[in-house]
Length: 238
Ligand code: SAH
Image 1 (tube, rainbow, N blue to C red):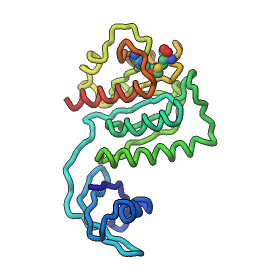
Image 2 (image 1 turned 45 degrees about the vertical axis):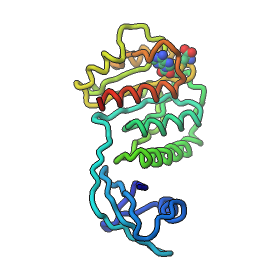
Image 3 (image 1 turned 45 degrees about the horizontal axis):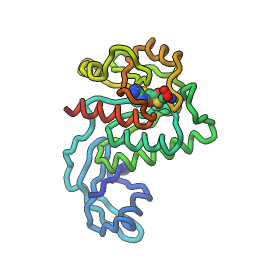
Image 4 (image 1 turned 180 degrees about the vertical axis):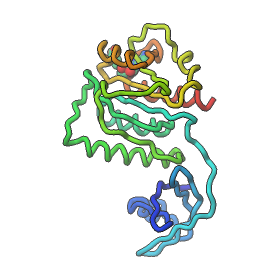
């Protein structure tokens, strides 16, 4: 069943023009057909009736499919090449991420300039909407504006994990995650193609991030994000 994130006006569900076109001309759902509308973190089985100039959505019943993770996961993802960052946004949504923060590191290969930031954020929001609809989520993940690594701040009720490729201290991911119940949120930081500088590692350690290894092999940045998010999602959902 097709699902769409909708807005509301005068107590009526409102579709974007693109979604109405998708329903009528791509999915060819007939008038009186059924769709699922997602609004305010809840999903509803609805019927849509339409003609050439208008449409109306009626709620049949609320669906109960709570697919969200039990804790908010915030991903500070290093700015990497466009198609790779797009992949991380899509997979992070499927894996239940709450927020994605594009983060600029010293060794980020991709340089960010102000003129293309708005286009990038618009593109990420489109990917988020499609990925959250496809994965039957009840809320849209949020993309935050670009930040520099030194702007990262998380409070004490957040479990702060840094995936560090040269990690050689004792923290194993398993024993870090075993502490998860003591925290409300989880924040993870994934470095760029060039990796972390020592200064960046020390900054994150100084604000409470725990450095963990994702194994003996060096993963691409996008692989590390997807792998760590999958491990956390699986750990939270037992
Ligand atoms: N250029 C670096 C690798 C950077 S990989 C080098 O050759 O050493 C990009 C990011 O993915 C890293 O900054 C880290 O956040 C993550 N990553 C990759 N492999 C990892 C591993 N084995 N353990 C933890 N994090 C890893």
